[in-house]
Every structure is written in C-alpha cells, then in structure tokens.
View 1 (cartoon, helix red, strand yellow):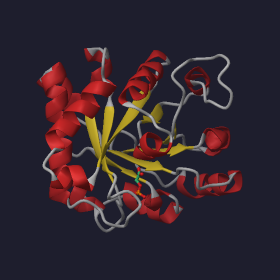
View 2 (cartoon, rainbow, N blue to C red; view 1 turned 90 degrees about the vertical axis):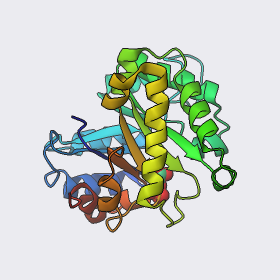
View 3 (cartoon, helix red, strand yellow; view 1 turned 45 degrees about the vertical axis):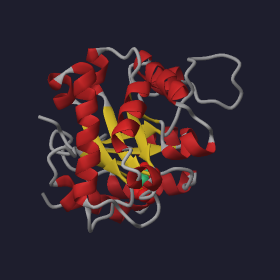
View 4 (spheres, rainbow, N blue to C red; view 1 turned 180 degrees about the vertical axis):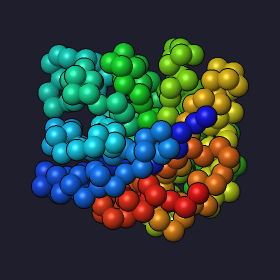
Length: 251
Ligand code: PGA
C-alpha cells in the first residue's frame, strides 16, 4: 500500500521566527504517519530550527535542494552528507525553479539524485511540464526524457523508494491548478515510464505526487485519483492553518 504523502515546499519565503511559530501551531495537529505522511521542505538555513521545534516528530522535515558532491570546495552549496547527519529524510531535486533559474540540466539532476541516495535520503524528484509542450502533444517525450535522464544508473531498490512529483510549470504559483484528470494523466505517464524502466512491481511501490496550485478546495478531487499518492504544495503550505487543511483533506 502506498501511504499518501502531503508535502509542502516553502521555497525562499520564511524567516527563522516564522518557521518556529509554524511548527508550534502544526506539530501536535498532524495525522498519524502510517495514515498520512506529512512533510515540509524548507531552506537549509531553517532546518535546525524546524527539527528542534518538531515536538511530536510527525512532520518530516525535508530540504529543497542539495549539491551533488558530499563535501569540498563548493562555496555556498548545501552538502547532502550534512543533511543526512541532521536526520533529513527527503530532498527535493529538479524543481522547475531550479531547472529554469539555476540552469539545472537532467545530468545535474541525475547527479543530485545519486547524491541523495548515497547519503541515505529519498529524493522528491520534480518533473516540469510547459503549456507549449502540452499543446504540441509532446507530453510523452517529455516524461520519458525527464524521468529517464534523472534516473540514469539508479538501481531497482533505489527506484522503489522514489517519490516523483508531476509539476506542470504553468500551474506552479499561478493559482491555476491542473484539473484532477490532467494531474492523473501526468502521474499515470510517470508511473508508466518507471514501469518501462524497472517493471510494474517497482512502479507500483513508488509514490507519485501532483504539484501546482494545490489548495484546500481542490486537494480532495486530486487525491481521489488512482495514480496520485500525494501533493507537493507551495503557496498553500505557508500558512499553518491552510497546511493543516491540506493534511486533513477529505478522503
Ligand atoms: P504552488 O507551488 O503550490 O505555489 O503552485 C508548487 C511547487 O512549486 O512545488
């Protein structure tokens, strides 16, 4: 059984004080982790504060990015080894903002996926999709190339634990979510791509999330879809009460 994962992505939006007060509000109101797993990916600078404030320990605290080397002369980068030492379980890799503003290619993303696994963490691998590609009917090529590129030389055992997020960039931060059917189609295509690479057994264990303008009003319809195992929410994860509405969505 795939346990639903409701994850937030704070991006670069919060101060240390904001992070602490968010944790104080949500930490004892979260669901049982074997029913619904909950996570927030936050900037590296906030992780220590969040871990300290994670009273009931139900929220999984993730990172938004890391470098692909474990350590060395890479000024300003975040070490995956240090994240692991902090007890971080998840790292977002390949978010569309990283791909477009920081020029991350499939090769860089593949190296980061390896670095996350090498350091005993799980990547939340984001796959982007533009409206242009959607209108041109190129979806299948896009899914195959992004997923295949990111998973080069990843083993079956690693792929089994993977979380992939289907995040059309036209839906990110736009207030215009994909419909539940569009989200399901994207997540289905991702699962099929993983099935072609690793077989049905692995594809059926791996979790696929939808991300892009998820909010308390649309989450239930999205979560009702067969191939959608959770969401990655940006804007709606910032306010603690709204995040609590997401994690307690109506089944
Ligand atoms: P959004 O962001 O929910 O604000 O659209 C999602 C994301 O970027 O992961």
